Length: 322
Image (cartoon, rainbow, N blue to C red; front, side, top):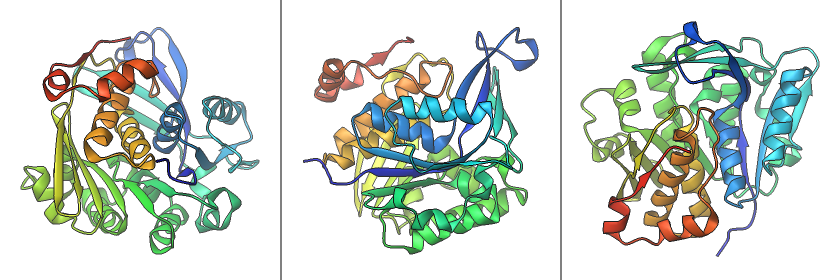
């Protein structure tokens, strides 16, 4: 059974410059132009799964803003709730892949989306939402953006919240982020957090998903992602763990947003925890196997077969690079 109403994703999207081929920024001979934003990443993958989805944000009245709007809308996302700001620019980020992972350099101060505020929640784009999806990135952008998240959590709508801790966005450092993000996550209905992310925020004593659940007992649904190993979903006190398939990783940024989309798509259809976690893993794999944040899903027939695999077949699954 498919739930009524769209999922509404709210937050900033930027133009991203990505070294091509993937490698350290300092040695790059060319930069590809892509689109990057946690909430719009999730929205695009939700649209790929056939879920009705809107993205609500603000963009500059500039070519980068036009590029973002065209790309997100071209994926089937309803972008009617995106406003154009004639006085503020579209944000920009540059990816710097390296042996130890990918670092990201942001050029987003004073961006159009940083001026978003609680007034968004009174707009028509939020009307009838099945779920409002937000992330910790939005809470870090500006006081008005944090007020938007706070008011959403105090309102009548069901709220999904991806912790999405980005140290560079928190001028008060880890201590500030730890307090704010724990409070926000504790008040949401569906929460996503990485185990390593939880440890970075709230301490190395969080050695397993159960410890994270003890720290965050408030959300009805809590999903703890343990990198390439597994993900665990809590529905109340009931836990379900599904191992992650092996993936030939090209670039990891955006995989968490994709996982959230897969999981939420399954919830929207009324499916259980095992299928939701499997669909999260498979959608994350679509992001991991490309240099950009948004990559192609397996063909519908292939996807259905993977979701229906027995436990042995699932554990043996390997997703090659595209």
